[in-house]
Length: 155
Image 1 (spheres, rainbow, N blue to C red):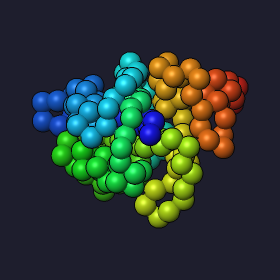
Image 2 (image 1 turned 90 degrees about the vertical axis):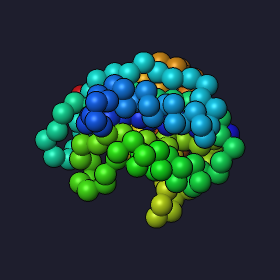
Image 3 (image 1 turned 180 degrees about the vertical axis):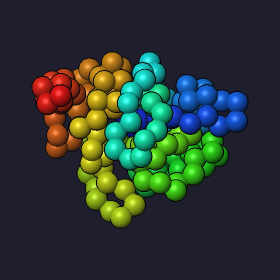
Image 4 (image 1 turned 135 degrees about the vertical axis):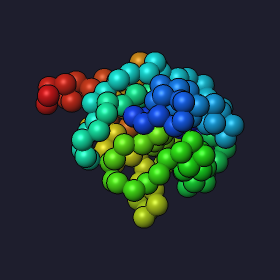
């Protein structure tokens, strides 16, 4: 199943700066999925949450044999391994991995909502995703080009 995963970091972990944390996240993701595409890393301002440093963001596309909940749990293990602490909602983090879409799966549970409920409003997801998958779309929301155009008009 094709999966789209957003990666973000704005805190170092030891001597690894946020850019390196994204790269480390991709290395770990490649152990659980077949990473087929990776965007360039872009710098973005934080959205919501407390005052914090800018983020480094990227999007990876891959093929997964895991069901979405098992993939999400494995992604949380990667975050923890790379120093993520969940103490402040939308706060700074060493690594954030968000499952954006998993094939055409639509689900809404306490643990996972697919497609990601805010991805269509996030330039830091849409821009790098569009770079590597211009024909991409979010089920129930639309194609990336239209979503980006709407987002740019709103700004």
